[in-house]
Length: 159
Image (cartoon, rainbow, N blue to C red; front, side, top):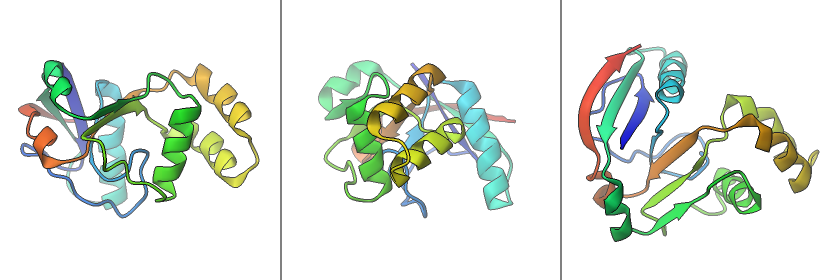
């Protein structure tokens, strides 16, 4: 399968770099199977950093290798996913016991709903009721170097 990473630079050899902000699944190398989502991330990253070029890097990922790793997969935004994202973003947990975490991405479209949930304005039921119709894109978060080495660079696209 093809996975994409959006950034302000080409990344032929992915590395796990600790982010300066809390992310959905904690520290890791984030990819998506949706090219358009990666393109949005590339543009956003370039704008945030104020340097480089918006680049989508494409990788080949052999899904059959997942059986060799500890994988956590969320099929949809549900209670378990919501709690996990909350705890990772609040740095209560890191998800480091997993090699790969797959699930919906809480992106710019969901920011208000997630924020209201974190602030207690929405309870879990209300937050999920508002998130489910959004058809969230996916994210594949590689949590350590051994699983990260399974990504094979294919090409980069400037956007």
